[in-house]
Image 1 (cartoon, rainbow, N blue to C red):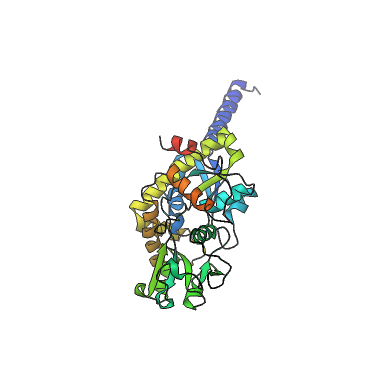
Image 2: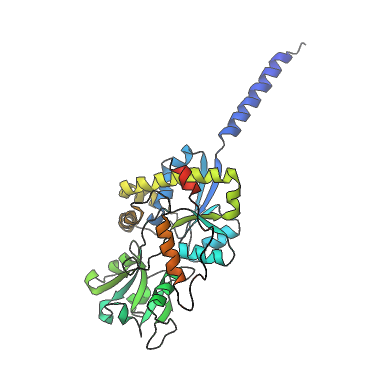
Length: 333
C-alpha cells in the first residue's frame, strides 16, 4: 500500500486553515450587568443584541438583569461583569471608597428621577418638606436625594425642621397606603404605577430633580480602571459602545418595536406591553440628544451636586480619573 503524503499534508493544511479561520471569527465575550430588571430602561442593549449590532462588531454579549438584591458595583468588583449600568452618584461614591470605576459612555442625557407627592398632603413646594415623611430608595440611589436635602439645609433625621426618611422598597406602596407624603419615582416607571393604581395625575404633585437643579447623571456605562490598561479590552469596549448606541438610537426611533424586544427578553413575564411601551416613550426623552459621549459640563454638574452636601456630602473631594472620552472618541468616529 502506497501512502500519499502529499494528500495527507494537503488535508492537514486545509484543516489547520479551517480551524484558524474559525478562531479568527470567534466573537469576543462581553458581560453587561444591568442596574435593574429587564425593562425598557435598558432597551438599547436588548435591541443591539436582537438586531445583530453586537454580532456586527464580533461581540458575544451576555446581558445580566439586576434586581433588588443586586448591586452593579458589587458584581463588577467580584468579577461578575465587564461593564455595568450605574448611576453616577453611586459610581463616584464607590470610587471614593476604593472601587476604581470609570465612566466610558453616557447614553442617558437627562435624569428621570423625581419625588411624587399626594396633593392632599399639602405639599406644594420644597419649603413644605420639613415635618414630612419622604420615601427614599437606598442601595446607592439615595445620594441624589441626600444632596438635594443638604442644598435645602433640611436635616434627614426627622423632627419639625427635618424630614423623616422612609426606606422605600422598589414599589409605590408607601404612597398608596399613605405611609409617606412623597415617594421616589422615575418618570418612566413608578410614576405610572401610581397612575395605574387609580390616583389621577391631578391628585399628585411632582418634583423633578432636573427642575430643582440637583439632577445627577443616571445609567452610564462603567468599567474597572485597571481593565483599560489592556488594549484588547479597550477595543472590545469601543465596539460595545458603538453597537450599544446604535441600539439606543434604533430604540428611540422605533419605541414600540423596542418595547416588544424587551418583552421577548423578560423571562419573568412580569412586564406588560402597555407599561413597557409607555416606559420606552419616556426613556427615549432621556436618551435623546446623547450620542454616548459624556458631556464634561453634565459630569461637573453631578460632581458639584454631590460635593455640595453640607456637613455630610456624598463625596468629599473632586474625583480624579473617574471618566474617559477615549472609548467614545473611537466608537463615534
